[in-house]
Structure formats: structure tokens, C-alpha cells
Length: 286
Image 1 (cartoon, rainbow, N blue to C red):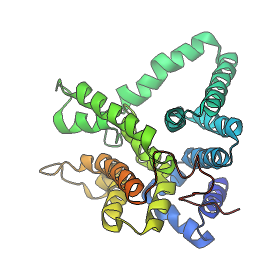
Image 2: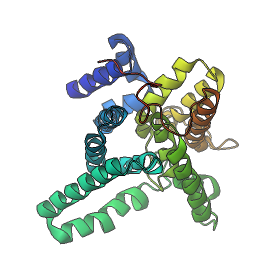
Image 3: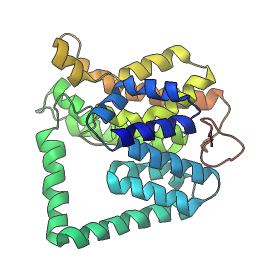
């Protein structure tokens, strides 16, 4: 817990937040759940911020290593390589993929080929899909559709695939700090409320622009709505409003706000954090 609080204060400092404001962010539901359950998301966010900072400063190799290390802790941040791929920052992409590959070699040395194969073919699907797919704590598009329209519907996989493709395209085009919101829509299953912790830089960046304040606040509230936690306390009705839709709609709202802010601020497809050192939307405090 002490280490997590230290990371929260460090991240807050990098984003230009005061220590008090940084600690206050710990009450934000995704961050609160991350702290409560000792999850890795603050570590991942720290690594992603280091990646974006080094990318901004032109240190492509080091930036790729940070990204690869983040993916070694939990694999889903690996998709955050897409904006760099779209920007043809191939050295950074190569460094990230090499780091990920080396992490898999280390895993192979530790558990052997059979153990690694079992992990990816049995344990990961067993945890992510068989055990949690469609459960209240699964806020992925796939899990939401399972709850809303039923597992027997033939539309589940086509709709999930269509949203994932659109989300990946958005991820490639959004500013770097807005990418995690699209990532949460692109992941096929088993997205937890605490994953929205990675959206903190976008929240800080968007708040500072002063634009779209109302829609932005609504999107943040929706993306921060821990349905399974609230339902456990007050037993939310499932009809006529499918409350389980709230978080995915919040992620979508953050994606839309990211595009609108990119358009109204006059920035182009390149991220203000990653490519042009003279333009920084979040800002860094040394």
C-alpha cells in the first residue's frame, strides 16, 4: 500500500497535481479499487508515462522498453503500441516487441514450454472468459453484451468484433493520453473497473483544456461507475435500465471527447505527448 501511495504521488507530480490533489484522486473509484486490491494498474500507468515522456524527448528505444515492461506485467497495455505504429515510429515499436519477447523467454525458462502453453491456452481463457465473462465485474463490450442481450444471441461475437475494430482504429489516431479509453473498448473480454486508472492522464489533460466540460464530466462519471460494487451495496435494478451499460458507454464517451478535443484544439493525428516536444497537453513536472 505504501508503495502504491508513493506511485500515486509521483504520478500526480508528473501530471502537475499537488500532493493533496494526488491523494484525493485515490477516492476516484478506479484508483480506489486499484489501491484496495493491490493491483498493478498504478505500476502500468507509471511505466506508460515514462514511455510517453521518453517518446516526447526522442528516446525511442527507451520508450519502447518501458512499454514492453508494462506489457510484461499485464499483457493488455501492449496494444498501446498502435499509436506509435501508426506514426511509423518503428524503432520504438521494435524495442517494445523485443522487450515483450524477452519477457516471454524469461517465462519460458521459469515454467517450461508446457507450463507457458497451459497458461495461455487454459489459465488465461479460464479466468477471463469461463469464470468472469459476462459477470457484473466484467465491463468489456463482450461481457456487457452477454448481460444485456443474452449469451444465446448470434450477435454477440459480430458486435464485439465490430466495436473492437473501431476501437483499435481510434486507438491508433487518438492522442497518446486518450488511448487507454479506446483500449478498454478494444479488449475482447474481462475488463475491470480499475483498468480505467490508465485514463487518468486524459482526465487531467481534458480538464485543463476547459472545453467540453459538461460532456467530459459525464463521460468520466460513467467510466468510473463500479457497477458490481454499487450493486453489491444497494442492489441496483437491472430493468428497465441496464446499468451494466454505464461503464462501456463511459469509455466510449472518453473516446469521443478525445477526438473532439483533438479537433477543437487544432492538433493533428500525432500525439502532443509523443511526437512534438514543443507541444505537451498533459505537461511534465520534474
